Image 1 (cartoon, rainbow, N blue to C red):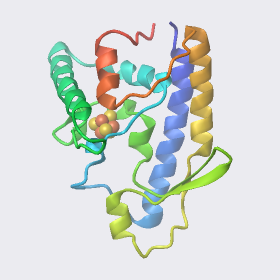
Image 2 (tube, rainbow, N blue to C red):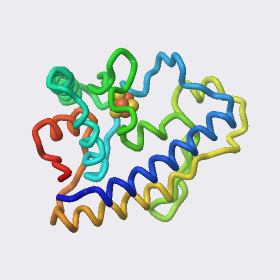
Image 3 (cartoon, rainbow, N blue to C red):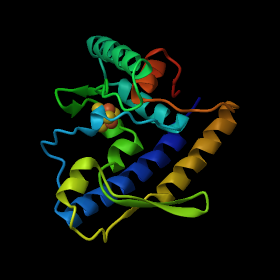
Length: 192
Ligand code: SF4
């Protein structure tokens, strides 16, 4: 399926998220550098096919050896997740020596996790106070800058609706990054 128009729109949203995130880091004089509580070991779920298609684009630039290494790490991470409590720590298969090998293609939660946010959904406002390190370091700082996640979620939901309609996909989507990676490697997310 031709995906370009959807992926271009998603790219714009990611850019806006990255700008908001940088602004939040500046506002709080906060940095993720050298963080021992790496968010790449946090078990996140992703909820859109759209983001899986976007991540799949990044796989085009990987060679065979890199793909094999990522596939092996993804299988191990998926096994750990499936055999352990919800908070089991398993490094994301895309993290290599502390760096994301597909950084420019990483999903939304990787971009936005860590700083205070607000989100309007289910008729009420939700608030998040940031990652563990942020909460510890900025315990006494006024939380006077919150990334508003609402427009980002709404725009991604709209793209997701359009993709699902086009694909006639009505199923539920909830995957860890390891599961996303395995679907992509198994050839389920061709973008053209
Ligand atoms: S996709 Fe990249 S940034 Fe996100 S958890 Fe994995 S390695 Fe970390």
